[in-house]
Amino acid sequence: MTATTSRPAPHGLLIANLLAQLAFGLLAMTICLPSMQEWGAIFGSSQAAVQLSFSGYVVTYGSLQLLYGPLSDRLGRKRVLLFGLSVSFTGSVLAALAPSLPLLVAARVLQGAGAAAGMVVGRAMVQDLFTGPERTRVMAYVGMAMGLCPPLATIVGGQLHVRLGWQANFVVMAVLAAVLFVAAWRGLPDHQPSTTAQPHWLTAMLGSYARLAREPSFLLHVAILAMTTATFYAFLGGAPIVLGSYGVRPDGIGFYIMCVPGSYIVGNFLAARLAMGTGPVPMMRWGQALTLGGIVLMLVLAFAGWRSPLAFALPLTLLGIGHGLLVPPALAGTVGLVPALAGSAAAVAGLSQQLTGAVGGFAVGLFPHHGAGNLGWLMLGFALAGAMAQWVLHRQPRH
Image 1 (tube, rainbow, N blue to C red):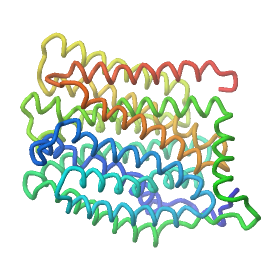
Image 2: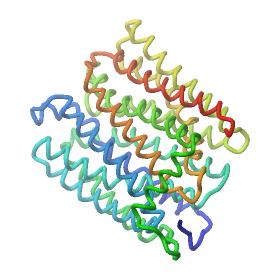
Image 3: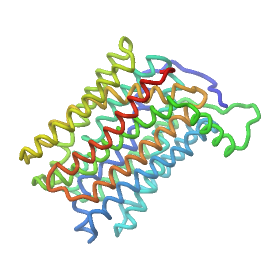
Image 4: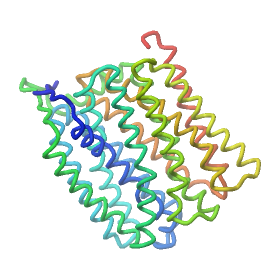
């Protein structure tokens, strides 16, 4: 379907550029989380309505990947990425200027629609530039970089909220979008479309997705990623509420949330070290075991009466390590199954992750959170669904 005119040897600056493009969407998603516990009072709205600002971002962040993926296969990676960054810049500016919650939700939707390009194009470019176990290794580095995003974003976002107001978070994201636009324009290689005759873009897109839908292993890898993301997004959406019930203010939330993404970096580091000598199956099994163990331990402490921020956050370090071991081989399994459709595969994986993540984030607002119990049960349900998909995958003859 497409061809890459050149495959320059990846170097540190290029990899850093790719990592930044991939991380932008998660930064934009999480930087305003500390502000969300106060938006209800600021705008006179319910917590469920406030959660729509998170879910709305996540839905467009995921669904637009379904379009950006095949377009990047057909039109070229860089062109699609630059368009997405422009859209996200516009959404960030509008969010900073929003006078009401409905307009803020709309601006967040636009911001997510643009940020989707960085995720899908970045993953596809990893497929373009790396092969075999090295791709899994680079996916682990991607995970380490993205694991830094939630704690850094929530810490910075909380400090900006307290000192300059919640609007400052969106000003920062607008500036970052402009910087990444220049970095992509000047620093990323072009992925040129094929010069041979091609069918209409819509026909080609539907054909790509139909081809991927016939691969059970691909669908099961996607299901694992989707449930893993839903578990994590439920944590991101619910942690500020749970921590608020324990008396933690916006400028302190990020330090507790850091336990999960910080340990996720450790898990990705272990995955990068193990990628060359350990197969994906053992890594994924250990990842699921640690994920379930962390959630169960957090629930046990909650029902034992340990109502404190540390009793909530520390057990979930096991979840972070588990996700760090689980996600890199699962991602490599999606984009590497049909290399010619790497962009489309990354789009399907991204869409599934963000839609289930949106469900997880929105479901948080449907239950009271005066402690960690309800959030823990919600996370456990998503994690068990991912473990079931992995059990089926590892029973596949082809796997």
